[in-house]
Amino acid sequence: MPDINTILFYIFAFLIVSFSFIVVFAKNIIYSAVSLFVTLFGTAALYILLRADFLAITQVMVYIGGILILLIFGIMMTTRITDSEIKTTNLSSVPAVFVSAGVFVILIIVLLTTKWNINPPVENDVTVNRIGNLLLTTYLLPFEIASVVLLIALMGAAMYARKK
Amino acid sequence: MIFIFSNMVSLDYFLTLSIILFSIGVIGVLIRRNAIIIFMSIELMLNSVNLSLISFSSFMGDSQGQILVFFVMAVAAAEAAVGLAIIIALFRNKETINIDEINILKW
Image (tube, rainbow over all chains, first blue to last red; front, side, top):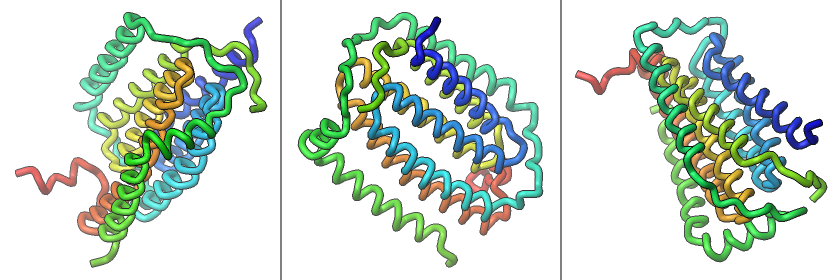
């Protein structure tokens, strides 16, 4: 009898993989966006299984609340939903599958041949305190630079998307 | 924290899932010709890398990997805003977001 952790992992892994296939292969672009929603939510659930509670919440807020809404705005502004996309030429899909399978095999080999340095995980551990401490001590400069990057991206995006 | 699952799934499972997600993202970038779908595939790949970083961090008992994920998310948000703005500007100029037709830099 597998424990609850393993069962949850398999459920979410199945959800993530199947819906990410839909993201990539769906004809209708709106289906892709909605499947991306499920994929991101499943990943957030796996973050909770990995005891990264703060990042799970951040994932839901940043990816689902921000990026996905932005993506759907982009879809609405650039495509007519009733159109189906012209199918990709078969010319590029066979090499693409080879490249992707190559990436997969190389990464699996790396995974199998590396000896990972694993410590026993800490029980009932809350990561928010430690993340907050690290962000305001060791990683203070990258934190501030990230805020500047976000500001510049905001201004750049507004400038590009504006009508000339 | 409420989640008191005593024994965790092993690290290899999470890394394998992350590898599968990354490969699906690579296929998406290579075979789709819609700029927004390519964009979503890039988000998938970013997500798989985040998953592997978090599993490393969690299995080492070290929070620094989660800080890295935090920065990846910030940069992904910036990238999403700028990328979609560029796609919208392209659509305004060329009336298409099929990247086979956006070849004005190619001679």
